[in-house]
Image (cartoon, rainbow over all chains, first blue to last red):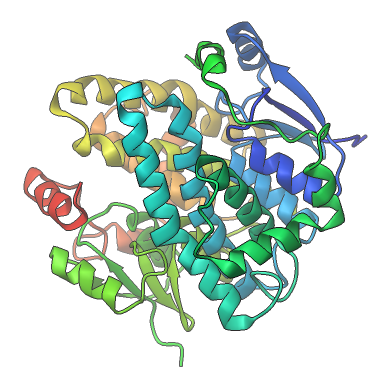
Length: 221
Length: 222
């Protein structure tokens, strides 16, 4: 019996958000089980559900999958969001790995000590605008197609959109110098499954607020 | 024109070592171009050959591939070390992510502040012994096969052997509670391509010493 995938994580973005995006983009309905306290995590650890004692964990197709990359790889392949051959996979992987690097920076921003926050934000903006965004802008310019790889919608497009939106939350005009990324953002946002995910009431999670940080720290530390 | 893969990195393990292991295990000969100074890295950047201005970079099959996991996934798939279907891939991915986390801790150890080294080493040993190795010991026990996934050599086995040897460099008797991993280590080490890679004179790199760490810090500004 398959049923819907079931996601185990706290009620926030973290390392599960990219998985939510991917499932939503693929039009796959999923359930969520939220960790609210350390006891919730301990319970999962004790009942053997977490291979390496960590979340994210996703119950899918009879497996209790862990490790966000393994989960994302599985979902992308299953729902044909991973290119048509090995070479397209390679390009998608390169693009996605860099997006994950930028996401990590964005994700940990809220956890920076107050005296380091400003510098950390400057690092995010510098890396986004000088290292990462120029690459995707150039990719789109060079082939002139609507999607990053193989003229076909893939996880690379989904994950880039997710990151563009998170970056704009840090600095609203961060895409000012990237016209093709701006039109990419609009175009991918309009794909029906994604448009639905971007509407209020979806399972997309809001950014973590300062006031929620202690609660999250308590679960994991 | 195919030619041999060409690896661009420093002359040390770092993030390139797992790639060397995988190519070697697959019996693929490869060339290496070593970054020895900050200028070498700047030149690669200025030549526009590093997609995100970072190494590892591997020239392979007409591509200049970057991002360690992208490179490893490509090599694993190309040389049939990635399982036979989606489910086997899923297991291999989960296992490899675990060994990546463990080896990452060991790799960053020399770059931690000196006063945290002892504590971090203890954490590595604790994690290896309580979080990671039990999983692989249990997997081998559960199916009784020689390899982690699908009764066939895969990327997961090669990566686990690399992780075991790195952990033993931290604590020589770290496998004492894991008889199946000890047997696994012996068995996988004896696969001809891997046995060759483990011999002196191969392209396997030694652990970084103080002097090399200083060079790496200069090159990457860390």
